[in-house]
Image (cartoon, rainbow, N blue to C red; front, side, top):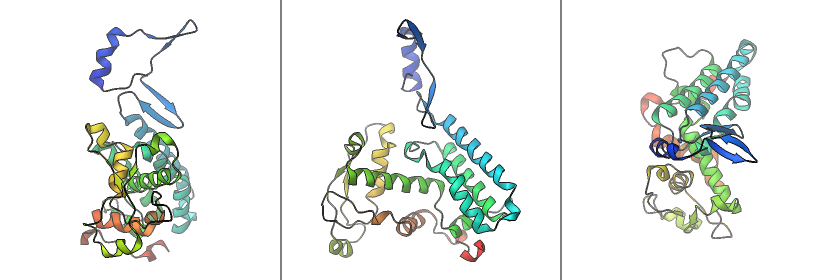
Length: 259
């Protein structure tokens, strides 16, 4: 598979053979490949992966609809969390450079899950209040949390090495310093260089470093290890909600809606 922009790959094709000669057999180039359940395109396009995820989510929800009226909302919530949302979470670390249309498509898949859980949301009603009542982040916020958690584990375990080399820890403040400093004066935890291309700007290492620097940290016994405490659901949910869900028209419904 040739990897690069559309113009770059197109310019190379006239000078390339039809494929690779391996043991006397010509293996043609592929436009895309599927590995570990993820479709990779040589043109850095996630359209096939989004379509694959859409099919998986709709198929799972369709299968669950047969038992919809026999299940309570709490049970439907558990089933969606166990059988449907993993389709959205699994490729999250790769989907850091989605277009607006692709981001909207994934958000609509999450909205479909929420509508199944409640079962009584009007067709034209806004889904955000119901999502907040569940304590869920948006689809984009959920991917950001997953990426931060993965990046923290990579830094903590220093493995795998080729991903760990993309992060440089400056220093984690102690608990006393963290309490005395405001969020605006807090020094960054991870160092990163300004990206030179749009692809690097949306890379996993860069986007994760930006997100991690916005979260509070407390130093552990090792100055180069990050605690997992900033990635607990309450603190992350609060951070993401303050950044995008603070208007009065999108208040969360009471938790009694799950009964």
